[in-house]
Length: 255
Ligand code: FPP
Image 1 (cartoon, rainbow, N blue to C red):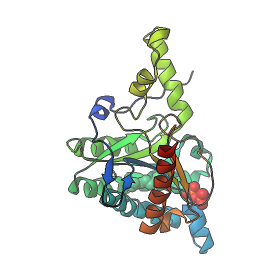
Image 2 (image 1 turned 30 degrees about the vertical axis):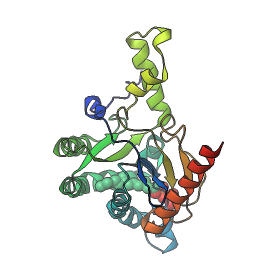
Image 3 (image 1 turned 45 degrees about the vertical axis):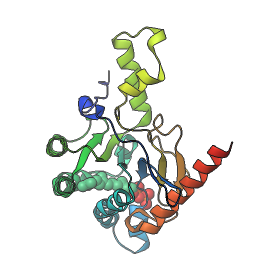
């Protein structure tokens, strides 16, 4: 039987997060949590006659730039979908490249987060991830544990359905009586427990799909899709996503 997906550092996620930030002078609401589907590294490279790995390199280097744009606007939590459980079906050389480069560059990336007092988290199953990558993830979580204001959540080896199955199994194992199976009880057992719900689900590269990402957490999220590929996402793209989110917030308030 497959072992159950493991929760990562659950107590560390329990810290409260500030309420949403609103810019009163413009009436603009800044989403508290933006979850990115970072799509299009491969296409961006192929369109330029480059190898897909070059797209992954530029995409990886662009993560901090995009995160900083968001934090500067007042966003508190950024979740970046870097690897899904379905991505293990990719060609082995591409898997090897992504895992090796994550191991090699993650700690430098996290030192940059640490210098800006941003906390690093990992959401995903630890199974299948190479031991060397897990060691770097654990070191990164430890290094930034004391920061509470802003969070960077690397979603690596994740599946929304696997997460919900894990929640169901946790409840069954306890066992939890039926009347105690509530939304709050599920929230508390998610791999993202303690993080606020996703307000804005932002996808690059044009496809209007959820891709098994944060299924429970995005129940009330606004979906924004841009045609631009991840390595070239700009501040204007982020601003447009936030404008689109604001239009839906205002529409919801009118009804
Ligand atoms: C999707 O593009 C993007 C990825 C698979 C990103 C992977 C990135 C990481 C694992 C970087 C994490 C590392 C650090 C140091 C933060 P795609 O390949 O799906 O593009 P395509 O849709 O055009 O094929």
